[in-house]
Image (tube, rainbow, N blue to C red; front, side):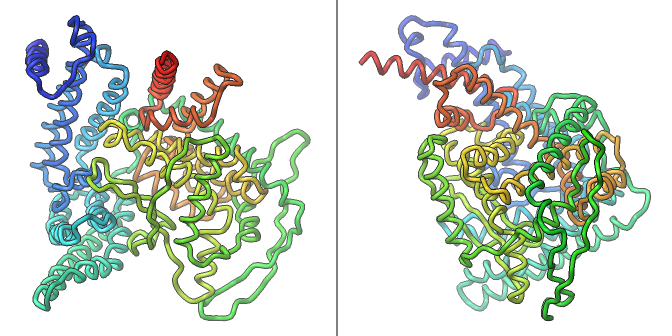
Length: 627
C-alpha cells in the first residue's frame, strides 16, 4: 500500500503538480531525495486529513486553528458524533504511521512529532468519554462564543452572523448536557457551574454586539428573542452543573499514574514517569523556595509593623489598623527554613502601588514598543516591528483574569494579535485597589516580558512563517517554557532589576513550582484534594482563595503547570549548550533567532531544530562569501 502511494505521488510530482524537485533530483534523479520529497508530501497529506476531521467534527477547535468556515457551528456533543470522530482520528493516525521519520526531511521530523502528539491527545480525550463525565466539555461552548467575539474580521456582518449561529446553538448544547452527563466529578461540576454563572452575567455584552448590526426594529427584536433563548439555555446549564456539584460519591477527578503519564506524553511531550517526575519537581520547588527566601531578605529588615487599609464596605471611609508582627521561625545554624507565602503577601501589600498612568491601554502599548527597542539595542533579540492591539477585557473573562493574550488563530486569513486588559471598575477606592493588585509596577513588568516582549507575543510575531503543523499544533510545553524564559531573560538583561521586581519574579516562579508539584502529586494520586490544599495553605502559607484557584487549573488542565517547568528547562539547556560550544562567539540575538525560527516544537526536538538552523545559517554564510 505504501509503495503504491509513493508511485502515485511520484507520478503527481513528475506531471507538474506545482512541486519543484531538488536540483539533484531534477538533473540526476537522486532517488534518496525523491523519497524524502514523497515522504514530506505524505506528511502534508496526513496533516490535511487531520484538519478535515477538525472541520467536520470539532468546529470550535477548527476556529482556533484559523478555519473560518467552522465559525458558525458549535461541536455536536453526542455519542454518535464522538464515535464517528474517534474512528476518523484513528484512521488519520494509521496514515501517519505510514510516514517514516527516518525518510522525512530534517525540518519535517519535528512537524511529524507535533502531529503525532496532537492526534494522540485528541484520541485520548475521546476515549475518556468526556461526553458523559466532563461538564467542562459543555462549558467550553461559552468560550467558543467568545472566540468569535474576540477577533474582528474584515466583514462585521459575517462576524455577527457567525456569532449569532453559535449563540443559537447553545440550547442544543444545554439539552445534550442534560441528556448525556452521568455523575461527573463534583469538583469539575463546580468549575463548570462557575463558568456558566459568569457566562450568564456577562451575556448582555454578546447581545449588544449583535444588536449593533441590526438594520431595523424587526431584526433587533429577533436578536433580543434569540439572545433570551440562549441566556435561558445558559441558566439551564448552570442549574444542571449546580445539581451535579452537590451530588455525593461521584467519581474522582484525579487521573492516576497511568493516565497522567499518557496526558503528559501526548499533550505536553513529557515522557518521564510520574514517580521520577515528582522527585524532580520536589527539587525544583526547593530551589524556588530558596530563591524566594533570598528575594525576601531586603524586606525583612524593614519595620515589622505596617499600616494596611481595611474596607468592609467599598462605599465607606477606610480605616487603618496595625498588622501584628509575625514571629519568624528561628532556624538552627545551617538549616534552611522555607519561606511562607504569607511573607510575600505582607511585603507585596507594602510595595504595590497603583500605576501613575491611568490610560492602561496606551501605557501598555508604549511600554511594549519600548521594551522591544530595549532588547534589540541590547543585542538580545533580532529586530521586529511590534504591532498589536490592546483592548478592554470582555466581562466574561474579567471575572477570573486580569489580562488575556489572544494570538492569531492558526491559518487565519487576516491575522490579528490582541491583548485584553481587565479595566478597573467600582468606586474610586475599588479601582485603585484593583490597579494595585493587577498592574502594580513589578507585576506590569512581568506581564510585559512574559506575555508580550520577549514573551508570547514576540514569539508569535517571529513565527509568522512557520510550517502549518507548527502554527496549528504547537507544543504547549515549549510555548509555556519560552514565556517563563522571557521573564528570566528580562532579569538577566537588566529590565527586571529592583529588589521589588526581583521579589515578584521569585514569587511567580515559586507559585509556578508549587502548582507543578501539586499537579503531579494530585494526579498521580499521591495527594487527595484535601492533601493538596493542606500542602498549599497549611504547609506553605498560600491564601485559601489562591490555593483553590491553583487547584482549579490543575484539575481542569492536568500537566499544564508541569509543562512550564519542563519547557523552561528545555530552552535553558539548549542555550547552555550553545553558550559553551560557541564561547565568545555566542550571540544572544542570533541564538534567540534560531529558537524563534524553530517555533514550539516538542521539547525533545528543540536541540535538533536549533542545530539544524545553525548549520543552515553557516551554509548560507559560506555561500554568500563565495560571491
